[in-house]
Each structure stands twice: as C-alpha cells, then as structure tokens.
Length: 139
Image 1 (cartoon, one colour):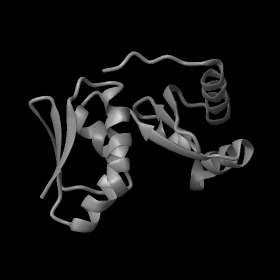
Image 2 (tube, one colour; image 1 turned 90 degrees about the vertical axis):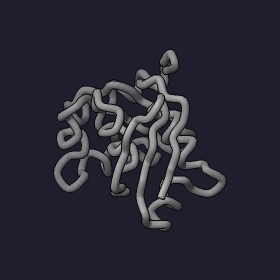
Image 3 (cartoon, one colour; image 1 turned 180 degrees about the vertical axis):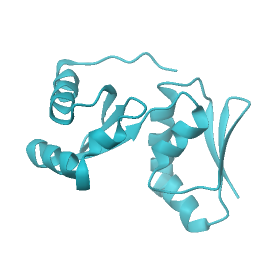
Image 4 (spheres, rainbow, N blue to C red; image 1 turned 135 degrees about the vertical axis):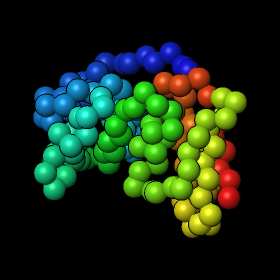
C-alpha cells in the first residue's frame, strides 16, 4: 500500500470529474496519455452516464482517454473491477498475492499485455489500496 499524493493538476481533474458526473471520486491516476478515475462503490453508473455520455464528454474536453474503475473493499472484487471489461474465471488472495485464474490464453494475454505492461499497471492500481506483493496469472 503506497501513500497517495496529489499535485494541483490531479486535484483539478478530480474536481472537474466530480462536478461533471456528480459522482464521488476516491482517486485519480495520471498514466501519461490517459486518466484513470477510481470512484466510490455504487457510483460507477453515475460516473459513466447514460450511453457513456459523461466519459465521451470528458474525453472530448480533456483530449485524453478516460477510464473509470469502481472501488470495492474486497480485494478480489476490486481486481475484477480493475480488469473489466475482461472477464476472468477466478480471482483470490493467497498469502498477500492476488491469483487470477482463467483457462483462456487470449484472456491471459490481455491481462498480462506486451512485456507485462498491463499487469504492472493493474498491480500499481491495486497496491495503492491493498497491501499485496504481486499479481499472478495462472491457468
């Protein structure tokens, strides 16, 4: 679990997102070309909007890709939310490691990404809130 620090730009993004969507933001992560907003549990529908209208509006105004993730106190459910729209068979916490199981090789490839880039991003997001060592993808 890392200590989260916000600079003035991230605070502006959070305020802008909350004012436009009327949803409560827990966190904002700037990953260069895109912004990832983590919203409180139950706020995902409000944040996305009907037919993703809020997301499209924000992307047009900021000229950046926007991703919204719903927070959950349960590590397994939060990891599923981070992985969405990818569906996986099983997610569980084993000895401070998150184990993701799915027999489909294509799904595993999308989770891991080229040079494990996606897996690193997922681990970075999850480790901001939960004390995990690693995320492991198994058959």
